[in-house]
Image 1 (tube, one colour):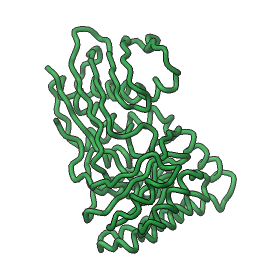
Image 2 (cartoon, helix red, strand yellow):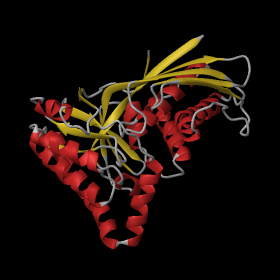
Image 3 (cartoon, rainbow, N blue to C red):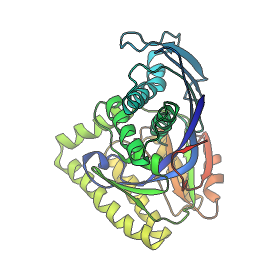
Length: 328
């Protein structure tokens, strides 16, 4: 038997980084998906095949024991990035099904670049848990999939993850996350444009950097709280379908994130290119340090502007994914 599940990536309208400290955030799922196909094995080993997870693809096979890791001739951080979330997702599926010794063949195909700020790890974790538990004959409630996927990110990111990415990927649409309080939101089909600079980042390192700044300077802690205030204002604009105000608040949010040290020259250049191309607002999305920006643009001039920007490797429109995790 073989089971395939998929889950969408995401962009942040507002609130990344601040959400780690209990402030609200509003991420939105987008129709770029990670698909995870799982087949149960007759032994307790894992065989993981990955396509387009920041490297050109690989296959590794390794055992259930913690000291029996993958043996493959590529840089260790790349393997850890691509397999760490799979390992923890499999551990959650085994726990949910009461099958600690279950082995799997796992195949990952993703339209979401790894480390680009578009929620690739969350989508892989969500789809992986859903597919693996179904393969073992257990169907989890979507919110339990989200909760277990959060535990995956919490473990891999050394306790610094929030519930935002995984809840958004599991549920789809627009969501609001504040601490452990996770709710879905009504949202119009926002005119998202995404620009990607072709680089990846270490989410944990960037989160640690903000934490250190926040601990050192009171005004940095105040900046994090200001992001939370901005999110609350943005929720009202979202409920009203006021795209113009959403864009202005996105611009403000980008400035605050830049002040916290998580922007980059490539991101700033893409943000300004999108605005110059007609976007009503643009900001980095995700942990920062490189990766992606998100803009709101009905007319599409920002796609052209981004495609002509040397720092932008890819620019595309992104539809709101109204459906979260699903069986394919």
